[in-house]
Amino acid sequence: MRITRLSLISLLCAAALASCGGKKEHSYRMDYTVAMDTVGHYLLVDLDLSMAPGSGAVTLNMPRWTPGYYEMLDYPKHLCDFSAADPAGKAVAWEKSGMNRWVVSVPDDGRVRVSYRIYANRRDVGSSRVESDIAFVSPAGVFMHVDGDLQHPVRVRFDLPGNWEKISSGLLPVEGTPDTFQADDFDRLYDCPFLLGNYYTCDFEHEGHPYHFAVETPEGIEESGFREDFCRIVSAATRMMGDVPYDNYCLIHMGAGGGGLEHWNSQACYTDGTYRFADRGRQVSFLAFTAHEYFHLYNVKCIRPAELWPFNYDTEAVTPMLWVSEGLTCYYEFRLLRTSGVATPDEALAQLSGYFSRYAPYEGQRHMSLRQSSYDIWLNFMNGDANERDVRINYYFKGPVVGLLMDIDIRRHTAQEKSLDDVMRGLYDRYYKELQRGFTEEEFWQEVEKAYGGPVPHLRALVNTTENIDYDAYLKDAGLYVDTESWAIRRVENPDPAQIAFLERLELL
Image 1 (cartoon, rainbow, N blue to C red):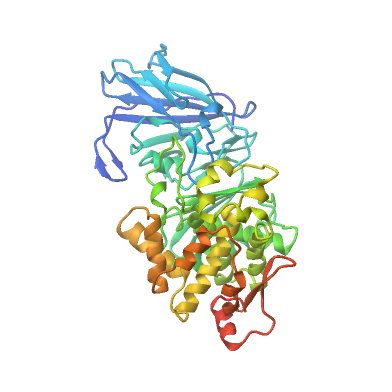
Image 2: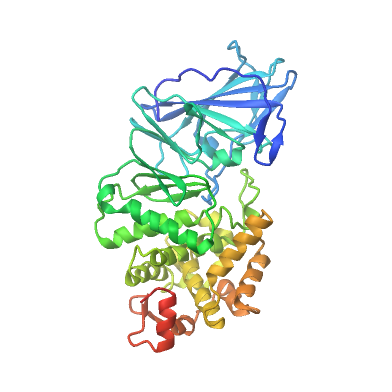
C-alpha cells in the first residue's frame, strides 16, 4: 500500500458503456489510477475525468460510510492534498462544498485530472491499510463519484510496487489487463474491496462456481481443512435457499485482528493470524464467523430492508430491521454449522449460548428492545461506555436467540411442516428475485405469518418487548432449556419422543 505515484491511465474520449440497469449513454468517463506509498501508508489516487466540452463545474462526492458497517466513518477525514489540473498540468480551480464534496471547474475541452492522497493505516474492515508488502483497499473511502450519479460505470487501475504480484477482489479484472477493473456502477465498486501485494491464494471450483481465496497469514490453512469446511457451508446454504446469488466469489482473509464485512460476492475478514487455532472452540467460532459473512449474501445483500436500498452514502440508513439482517444472520451461523456438519450439536449450541450469555444476565434488556437496537446502532456501533450492558442490548446477541424462538414456534405450530427457513426463502424469492426491491417491516411479518399460518402477535412481542422473556416456554417443545447458572442453552437430559423428533429436525442430536 505505498511508494511513489506512477503513470496515469491515458485519457480516453467519452464512450457508451453498459450500466446495471441496461444500456445507457453516458456523457463522461471516469478512470482511476491508484498507487501506493508503502512508507507513509498512503494510497495515491488519480482520476482522469473526461466530460463533454463546455460541461462547466462538476461536483465529486466521497461516501461517509460503507454498507454493512453501521457507523459514520467520515472517510474524507483521511484525504489530503486534493488538486485538479488540465491535461497539460495547469492547475484548475476547485473548492470544498460540505464535508464530502469537491466542486471542480472543468476546462472547456472537458478533461480534468484530479489527484489526492488517502492515509491508509487502520486495521478494520471498513478502512484501507497500506503496508510494506500488502494493501487492503476499502473502495468507499477511496473513490469519488459525480454527485447524484452513482449509476455510472467506472474503471480502476492499480500501479503496484515493483515486487508486488497479486490483486484479489470479487470484481474481476478487465480481460487482458490483470491490473485494471471495471464496475458497472459505483454501488458495485463500493461493495468490492481489494487485497493487493504478496500473499497466499487458492483458486478452485465448487458446484459450478469459481472461488478465489486470498489469505494474508495462511499458516496452517492446508492442514486445517478450512477450504473443505467452507465448501460444506456453501453447499448447506445453497440447499437451504435453493439458489446461489453470484457468479464468482472471493474470500479475503487478513491477518490477526477483529471484524468482518460482507460484500456482494466476497467477504473481507480479519482472522486469528493463523489457521492453527488455539483450541477447537476457537476454530468453530471462526467457522461460524465465516458462515455469518457468507450468509449475508442472502440476508442483507439480497434480502434487504427497504431502507437499505438505494444507498445514500451521505447519511445514516436507519431501519428497525437490522435485527433481521444481522441478528438472524447470527442465528443462521448456528444453523449452517449443523446443516453443513462442520460442527457437532454441542459445538453449535455452545456458539449460540455464547450470544445468549452476553445479554441475558444483564439489565440492558429492560431498557432497550431488539427493534430499538436496530435504530440506535448508529449511535452505539463502537460505543464502549461502561454502562453499556446496563442500558442497552445488541441485536448481534439477542437477535439469534429470538431467531431460535421464532424457528421453534413456527415448527411447533405447523407440525414441522414450516420453519424460519421458509420465511427467508419467501423474502428471497418475493422481494429479491421477483420484485427486485427491499422489504418493509410489515412485509417481513407477512412472510412470518404465511409460514406460521396465522397472526403472530406473540412473536412480534419478542422483538418489541423490554420485559423478561419466558425462554423455556418456547424451548421445551424442542427439548431445550436455559441453564441460568451458566446462561447456556442446553438439551434436556431425558427428552420425550416429541422432543427427540424436534431435536433431530434441528440437527441437535
